[in-house]
Structures are given as C-alpha cells and as structure tokens.
Image (tube, rainbow, N blue to C red):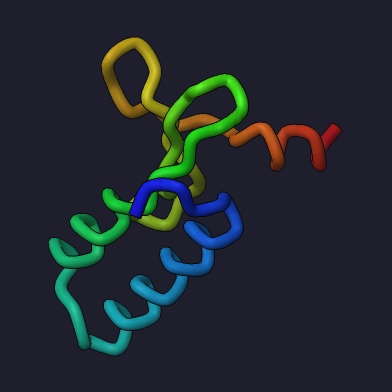
Length: 77
C-alpha cells in the first residue's frame, strides 16, 4: 500500500486497532497490515505507524526506529 499519505496510514492503523480490540483480527494480522502502511516523505525516508499504536517508525540506518514524522514535528513547533 505504498503511496498513502500520513493521514491515510494513521486512519488505517486506527481501523485495524479497533478491529483487534473487538476480537475480529489477531495481533499478527494487525502487525502485517500495518507493515503495508508505508509513507515516503519528501526526503525519501520511509515511515509507517507503530503496530502497537504508539506513534511512528522511520526506516533509518537499516532498521525501523521510533521517530516523529515531519508533519507532526512541524505542528509541534
């Protein structure tokens, strides 16, 4: 599902987490689905929501790491 926006990825994460809380899907299904919710920023970095619902991850130096996406960092400034 590459090419989605940050807002679309966040909305999809929330749908998956709600389905998990209702017992409709497993944690493994949530993790696999969220792994497809990738967003590429203007600098070419790849982002995805944290499958645990705790923010965002950025792929940096060969690993997924917790970070704040540019659109959230700008809003906080």
